[in-house]
Image (cartoon, rainbow, N blue to C red; front, side, top):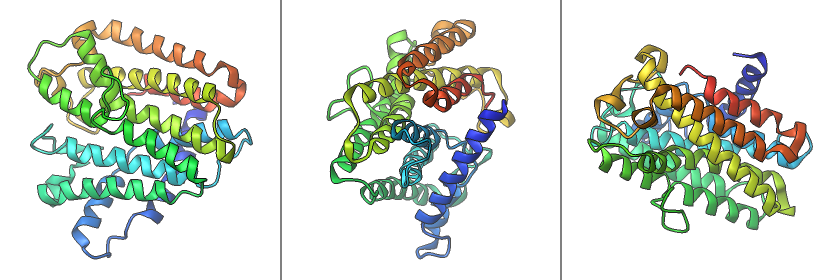
Length: 310
């Protein structure tokens, strides 16, 4: 991994982890079980890609070269939402997985009931954290609107192609065992995974603009960048599921194929999937061209998404 990527990931993860440590209830907070379950999954060793993308988008739009104060809290809220989705995704009623981020999944350690509630609690705490951001009411509402739409079932403006994270999960469940089509796979990927990545970048840009408000063209370009990079991320995830083992992935390998899941390689093959991911990243870069050198960290992270091995 290039040193610039390592530094971006390490710095962003440190900012995010410090915010999460401050925002999450401690393990001794009553009731102990729920708070320990939340912390078990949040601090299980994730890459923090979504909060780092948020932080770097905020830095780019702010234009000062510095991370705007409070941006790490927004990133932490996005990581809470991501972790809640993983906890629920791993449940026996959904993907039924017992390994996540190289650790036993939440329901394996704490039982199904506490795992469900831990996911619920993380989602609630995420929105509580966003509501408390040091931003203008207009900025906070804009962030809440974008994020809540991205994690929804699609009600509130999301397109049929990308119905929101929860909507994408439903489509994914209902499509198991069916022959995957290009349209179906793109819909699932843009919603189940891509929507949260996109809103991480867009909400970071909204926050970075501050009280002045983000220009419509800026948000449009960030959204295009996020949609392209988010889809590339999931395509690579599909490829890794077929080409890496469980130890390398930190989760159970080969489950997509075993469940006859709708994946990009299942429709297009591995070689074409890799080419598609590379083209999506090139298109994502083009969307950020007007930002010049200020966009380098976001571009570096996007490139990393397609070159990672886990």
